[in-house]
Image (cartoon, rainbow, N blue to C red; front, side, top):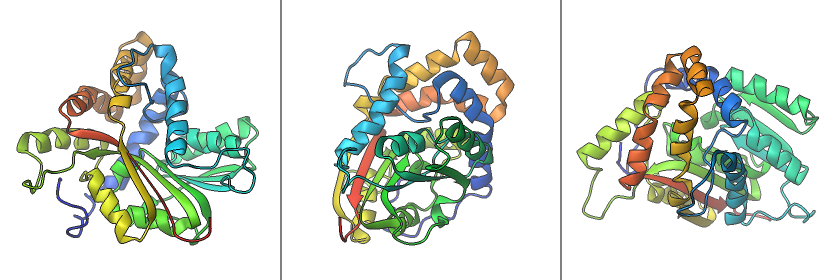
Length: 306
C-alpha cells in the first residue's frame, strides 16, 4: 500500500472496485447534497481557523479558488489565456464543472463512474441554464472517452485516491490536456517515506486499510510518487503542496452534520455503504493528526504552446 508507484507495476485493481465506487456514490450522493450541497470535496480554511457550519460551503468554493491560484490559471477576465475547454475527472454531481464553466465561460465535460451522479449533475446544469456548457457522463478516468489534446484545464478534485493505477491516471490526464494546458490534481496521499523506509509502518498500513475498505480505495501513494510520475511524463512546472492543515476543520464538521437529526435520518435511509463510510470518518481525522494522511495538491503543465 505504500510502495513507490513508479518503482514497480501497480497491483491490479481489486475485483469489483469500479462497481463498488459507483455504488457508493449512487447511494450517498443524495445524502451529501441534501446536507452539504453540490461540492463533494474538502473545504479550505486558514490554518488553525475555528469554523462554523455556515463557513463550510464557502470553504469548498475557496478550495476551488485556491487550487486555481496555486496552479496560476489565468483570471477569468483574461480572454486570450483563460481556459475555454475543461474536463472534470471524477466530477461528482458537477459542482466544480458548473462553477468553472460559469467562472470562465468555458465548455466543461465531466466524467464519473456513478450513473446517479451524472444524471443529477446534468439536471442541475439544466436547471441553472448551463446545458450548453456543461455535460456529465459515465466514464472511466483511466480510459477517458476524449481525443488527445482537447482540454486547456484538466481538473481532478479528490478523485485520484480511487485510481488503482496512479501512473495510468496521470498519463490520461496528460493525454487529454491541450499543449500548454494546466493539470490540477487535489487528492489524498499518504506521507512521503523516509530514505530509510521501504514502506509505511504496520499500524499506518492497518489504518489506511480500514479507510480503504469503507471508501473503495485501492493502494495509496505519496506526494513524491505523483511528482515522479509527472516527471516521467515530461510534464513541466510541477508544483506540490501539503494542505492538510488547511482542511483540518472539515472532517469534524462532516461528523457534526451527520449527528444532526437530518443527518441521522438521511444516513439510516441511505444504505449500508453510506453508513459504513460515516463510521470510519473518525479514522480520517486520526490519519491527519498522525501525519499519515496528507491532503495534497499537485499541479503541472503539458509542454507546448500556452
